[in-house]
Amino acid sequence: MNPKTNKIAAGIPDDRIIAKFQGQKKGRTVCCICGIHGNEQASIHAVRRVFNTLAARKKYFSGRLIAVAGNLPALKENLRFIDEDMNRLWHPHKVDIFRQGFNSNPISNEEKEATALIKLLDAEIDHASGSSIFLDMHTTSSKSKPFIIFGDTLRNRRIAAKFGVPYVLGLEEAIPGTLMEYITDRGHIGIVFEAGKHDDPASIDIHEAALWVLLHGTGCIRRSDFAEEIDRSTKLISAPSASLPSVLEVRYRHALVNDDHFKMNPGYINFQPVRRGEVLAEDKNGHIIANEMGHILMPLYQGLGNDGFFLTRQINKFWLTVSTVMRYLHFSKIVHFLPGVKLHPGRKDTLIVDTHTAKWFVLEIFHLLGYRRITQLNNRAMILARRQYDIIGPHHHYRL
Ligand SMILES: [Zn+2]
Image 1 (cartoon, protein in one colour):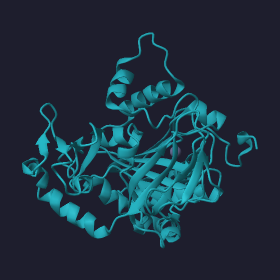
Image 2: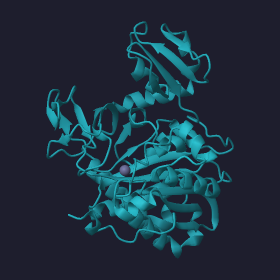
Image 3: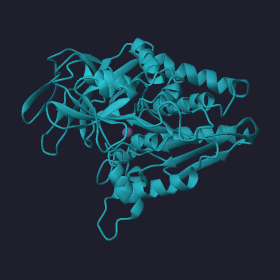
Image 4: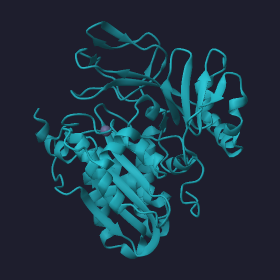
């Protein structure tokens, strides 16, 4: 099938700003990012529906809503990307280069698009009302119930809890350089919302519902004014995932290289339970098996991409509560007294952990405290950094 015949691949904007809306009352800025992957177009249709409804109801809206397109050339071609994945290049050192300009070095389509997006966000997003809230809207190549991904700060968790769909934690540790890592590191709130399969019209409904739920959760709209939208949306996004685990963490990423002829075995859908030893895919070296039991995430059934699949494991919600308490008590200030843990000599909030000396569940414990692994030095040592703006944002007079 020609991807351009995709039922929902119509109405791609020429301008990076899809729409903007200013309410009559003061409030937060909510920014939707649509189509960082060019074959994920449901969000564009969804945000337009929300803007259409809001147009006549300015006086009931507090704050500002803006929707921007990510990868415009890829959206026009209905391709995930043109040269490289635009959701893998937001490393701090690369962002510095985007900001400084490239001189005469050739750059990829996605580097150009990222540079333009940074410029636009710098111009459009201010801190007049505290941190902004970003909704990075995606779809998947396999059938999926809605779920969210975020950097595990307590500020992000507060917003994530409004959606009533499963959380997937630790993805930014498995795939560094995502846009949401950049957003969170700048002190904003940011949630990635995965609505369902790319070309399923229901993904538009789900994305629309997610945005209404977010606008309610951030105080931009009140239930008394938008009861119909909020009630319908809350039900629509949370009902499909009622039977799924509510929190999962990524345990394994199957990374692809160009010539390994990866082929996912047919029939896998997101969150499907898998057994240890189950054959999940094939490549030129033979079977690819699950190294532990868990739930499969984002099995790849499209031509383009660097991730074959992820394996996740359910986390008991009790641990999130423990984690919140530990963070409010600032346990992170004393962890370097533990055996095998020392402060990084040159970097703030960063630890070097020797896993042979620290024989406990190092990664699990540090995840609870808000750290993520940034480098595996060798098979016994790793560098972990604490996420910034965990409890309060850079604009202290606002709670979020
Ligand atoms: Zn995507």
